[in-house]
Length: 130
Image (cartoon, rainbow, N blue to C red; front, side, top):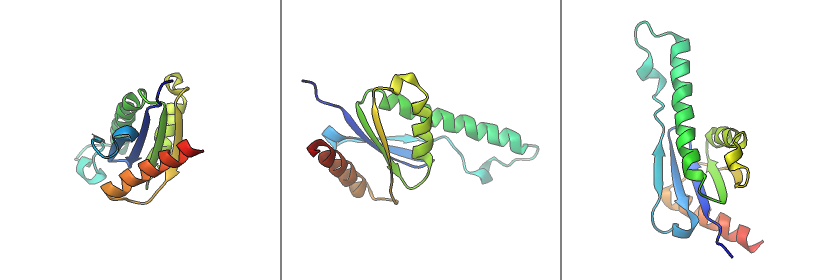
């Protein structure tokens, strides 16, 4: 009997906090998005299309980094205050490498680090009891 590897990810468009269920009281990993705020990118001569393409590429790279972390788990909960989690879920759903991974999405408010850890711990504890 193998133990399922479980991962909770609190995320928005700027960063993601990855919390493995078995080490919930310990370590976590943070993945930052390279997405820059719109005000920083508007330089003379930059077209809106160029800026949009750069933002799309940065967002794709962010989701790719998260996908690389997720592929080693069996059960994943994506949660957070923005629609970034749903966007990531849709990207993963189209990739056959993630077909056997249980991935769920849950809307949540902004949370402190402790609240995020507690959410992941409770989510997987309740799920394993069902």
